[in-house]
Image 1 (cartoon, rainbow, N blue to C red):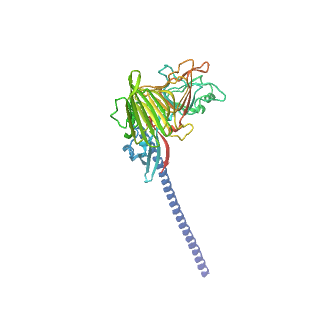
Image 2: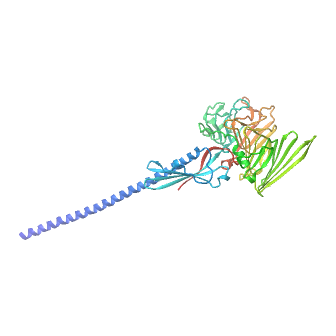
Image 3: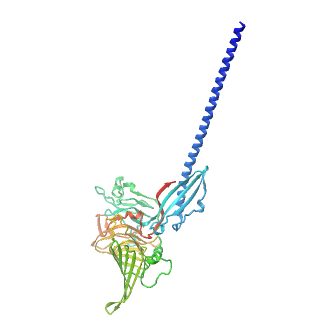
Amino acid sequence: MLLVYARGERERRGSVLGASLIALVVFVVLLILAAALLRGAAGSLRSAGRERDRALTVHLAESGAELGLQWLRSQPSPAAGTEAIRPAELQNVALGDGTISVEIVPFADNAKRSLRVYQVVGEGKGKTGYTKRVVYQVQEESFAQYAYFVSDPVSPVTGSPTWFTWADRMDGPVHGNAQLNIAWQVSNPAQPIFLSRVTTALGTPNYYPAISAPEDYAQIYKEGQTGHAISVAYIPMPEGTTKQQEAAWGSVAGFPTATGVYLRASQGGGVYICGAVQSMVFASTPACTQVTITQQPASDRQIVTTLAEDHALNKSTIESVTYTLTGSEWQESVRDQDTQPTVTNGLIYCDDTINGLQGVIAGAHTIAVASGKDIVIVGNLTLADNPVTNPASTSVLGLIAQRIVLDNPLGDLSVQAILLAGTESGGGYVYNKHWNVTPRQQGTFHLFGSLLQAKGGPMGKFSASTNTVLSGYTKDYRYDARMQRNAPPLFPTTGRYRRVGWQRL
């Protein structure tokens, strides 16, 4: 009996020891699994933290790019040169759990561009040191981006508001700083007046007749009710043509006082005209710009200047002949010639009024006159390399004056140019000299380009009761979409920039 008890006790003790060992093994395994889970959780937390930091730095970089764009817009003039700009107030700016730094990089060829381009680089850095960059590519906005622009549609000529009518067609962006006036009528199918977006800084347009149903908007805007936006930012008109004067002369001083035409291509300039112009007639081919300029500084003296820019040979030639009135005949008294081994920068500036403008012009040019002076168009003014038939054409023309006057009393008139008239403080407008002549002898004003003015200049007169045009022109305005990127040389800008590219680095 004693032997049997001892053996059972030993068996019981062995069973307990085995269970304890198993429990210990299970416990160790559980500890190992718990440790692995904790390590995994810690790793997940670290990974989540890194992902959060990366996401944060992307947002910081985007905020930096936006701050850089706002800084660029706040400057009184576009940044010059090619060196990178790092505004001191936008370096290592603390925001949330990170910092922001900004760099503005002008394009190397900005001096040759009609619209300058910049890279705006926003850099975000998180608390773990992770860095991300967002790059905006931004471009100056030109007034030429609008098909039609008016700061105040009330006409100084008539004292009344100017109107768009059912007979007009506006192909391109339209902006008014004040309330626009639109006379429309029902047609089936609808024939909208505005084929692109219309924006106004102040007030809903004045419609005649009043809008009575949502579908009425389709008679006015191609996009219906969404084709118009109100309360957008006010855009001030430019002040003066000093920049164009300096660009034409190739210097900021030393402007001439003797009547005549001065070729300044070799000085990096354009063509500078001193004294009023009686007529300016272009007769160009796509490869050569040619213009004849007539001036009469005195009753017995006349100067006829012929300018040629040969784009194929890259040279400019000018010849001026002075005629003196002897009795009843004009006789040549002086002849001057000059040839320069380059073409001009495209600027033609006159310190007085240019009358008698017409013809066919080649190349990229801007014609500007001194503040308070006018440009008078007397016949068709078109481009030799016609952008209507050749969208790849590089020929562009801009006109800048206090007033741009259309003085062609009969039939249609065709102009391929960007017309800008007036200043923010001095008014100015584009208008038809024969807007009120009856019976009506004019047809349609065909404009391929843009019409931009401080005040509303009259083009014609219409009857709301009979739905007819009584006098002057109806308007056929086609927007030159090339102006979104390639404005005429040194054409005025709005002081704003638009984003044309975006990249995350």
